[in-house]
Amino acid sequence: MTLTHSLITWAILYAQFVLAVAACLATLRTLRGPRAQDRVLGLDTLYVTVMLLFVVTGIRVGTPFFYEAAMVIGVMGFVATVALAKFLIRGEVIE
Image (cartoon, rainbow, N blue to C red; front, side, top):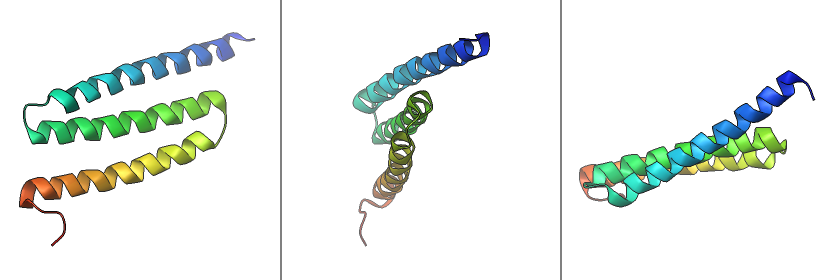
């Protein structure tokens, strides 16, 4: 095991830890947000951090499953954010 391999392994583990903490803080903002806009922003941050956590886990494990799951989370999170923003602006999603 070379120094470079060891450094990359520790960097990936550190990134996973930091992203998990960020996801916990985003969940806290989503649950405790004083306004609906804060909750939507927390949810948006949560899906981005979980998507990045899946990408970093895919790098660590080396399977394509995590990359595909990250793409699905990204698309679904974007659609949910647009729908929630439209609901907050107009009060309805379907016209």
